[in-house]
Amino acid sequence: MNIKDRVRGSLIGGAAGDALGYIVEFSSESTIFRQYGEKGVRRYRISPTSHKAIISDDTQMTLFTAAAMIVHDELRKTGLSAPLREYANIAYQDWLITQEMTYEEASTKVIKDSPDYPDGFISVVIKDVPELFQRRTPVVTCLNALQTRRDQRVNREHVESYIASKINNSYDCGAVMRVAPIGMMKKRDDIASVALEAAECAAITHSHSLGYMPAAVLAEIIYRILHNDGQLTLREIVEQSMADVAEIFRDEQDIDKLVNIVNKAVKLSENGDADLDNIHQLGEGWYADEVLATAIYCALKYQEDFSECIITAVNQNGDSDSAAAIAGNILGAYIGYDAIDNKWKEQLEIADVITNVADMLADTIE
Image 1 (cartoon, one colour):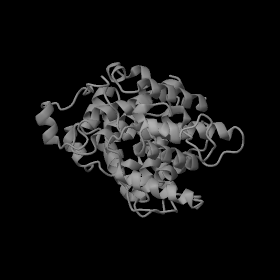
Image 2: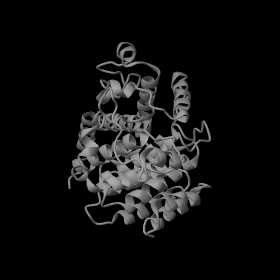
Image 3: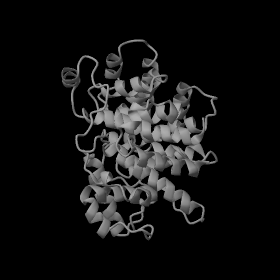
């Protein structure tokens, strides 16, 4: 399996989980099963206007992360590139513009064909996608934090480390649901730097360690899958990634909590008990550590069945779209794009944009 198939699988897999879960994001289990039957949500709800299953802010922000990765790689070739976190900050502020303006307003006021880095709209690879200018229940923490980061830039406050530049005490799922592309770095990149950069990018909006440390774990998992060459099982990849991040952040007060919940997810995925009973032991999934653990559980439990993986992640009390998006990121990368059922691809909003961005991102890796 080549890198392009894995990158496509991760981004499309994440978007598929997101679109499936978005329709019940804030619904309880009782509501889900009452409305959709005893097996819950098992297929997309199709929009009557677009005739597609619509994505949420999870996929939107993931694409802006990917855009930052692509710009970072272009400039790194020239020797002028700043750390990825700086481009991610600007790309996320591009996303903030999409939540504040219509596509038409942004096209005339902000977006330029040849943006002046870093002050222009840098996310040029997705600048002509009106669907990304839709408000799809964006995470309030992200909106507020990015307004603060924008003020820092306007005031010319240079931020070297977003982990050190704390602006809140948040660790909701918005910190981790967008960082899968950061795991798609070149094989020569030091794996510790992949984890640290993912944490820095998460800390742009979420200052609590349980917000940015799970992002580091997810990025390492994706990186190890892409460069694994079949040497490690998915469980071994998860365990090694968690061990690496535990060492990097060994002095953080809450690192043991993250280690324990990820280890619990791994063990629960092998016990044969009912999925909901197991998922309930991991929490509600509204916080970054819990949603990562739920996603890892689903990816490990159903690593041979992508459909069951995202369906299981959706049909529970927690943040359905984020859990399924992260599970889809992981398992999609592991099994590849071609192994994902066509039903999750054909009716997915902006699937062509997502695969195009995935291919551009894959080209930076190879």
